Image (cartoon, rainbow, N blue to C red):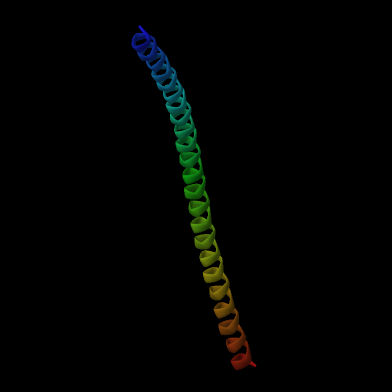
Length: 85
């Protein structure tokens, strides 16, 4: 009879451990899902920042090009003015 009692006690212990592992797995799965969502959000944010940075660089290049064009035009006009004197 004690062998049956011992087996029953072992069975209860194993069931308790199984339940504990199942709860732990559910918690880890939940944490993993949250981490994946956070990672996706951060990746989207990085992509947005990179896009904004690229747009800013293009805008600066356009500005620089316009400014260089104006400087060139000014030099040409100044040279014409000096020749016209």
